[in-house]
Amino acid sequence: MNIQIGARVRSFDFIFNKSGRDLEGPEACFVEGEVVAFDYAEGCKRYCILVDRDVFGGKEEEHRIGRLVTPPINGTPCFDQGFTEFVLAL
Image: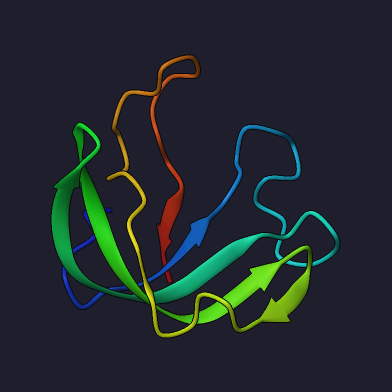
């Protein structure tokens, strides 16, 4: 699915291990929010996500709520493991 501005998404912090997409438990690390823009930074296109939910280590946090996070657009080549796919539409 092509994620557009206005989409509600979940962006995982770590996906290069078997528990990288956990939604609960100590390995669950992600944010949820709305895509508000696109950007180009650090050599690639990125989503700009306004965070309204922050989960780290399986616990609800507030550190990133109200902030923008900018994960790479899905399909961006990774240095060592294929292509990015950190962000899912909800």
